View 1: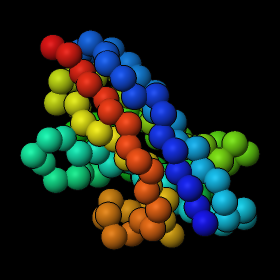
View 2: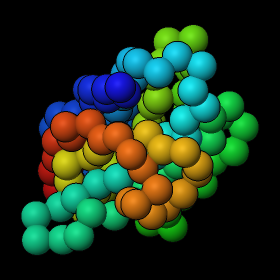
View 3: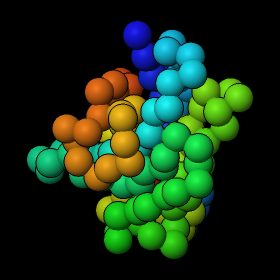
Length: 122
């Protein structure tokens, strides 16, 4: 069974940077697409970024395009989210997910991490 553990969240000032990591274990040789989602208090969980199994294809929500970068290192079973030029509106719990294809839809992902808090101060 696939297990995901996020790390790297914390408090950062507006304009700063943060890198999130998601470590994956289980199901060797499986070609999982990976995604990042976030959820702020009182709001629906929203798509942030996704990457295919090889790392050759990525796409982003318009709100983070040009500021965030998703990448993966399959040798380490780890996916990253590099966040630059952070804004207070980026404050949320960030979740890592694994699924069978690159998608912005929650239903496309079968496995989820526990989430890590990102707080951006004004």
